[in-house]
Image (tube, rainbow, N blue to C red):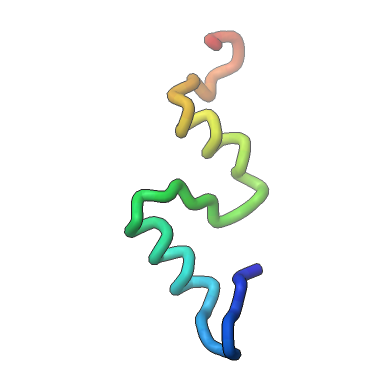
Length: 49
């Protein structure tokens, strides 16, 4: 979840701000492995690492 200070700030706003700052953002843990491979430049095809 998002860290909310003073009762304001939505998760979507914080994710967008991080992405705008050049931080790699993964919207779902279900695709975390895929996004890590992309960030590291690894192939997502089996047997080609």
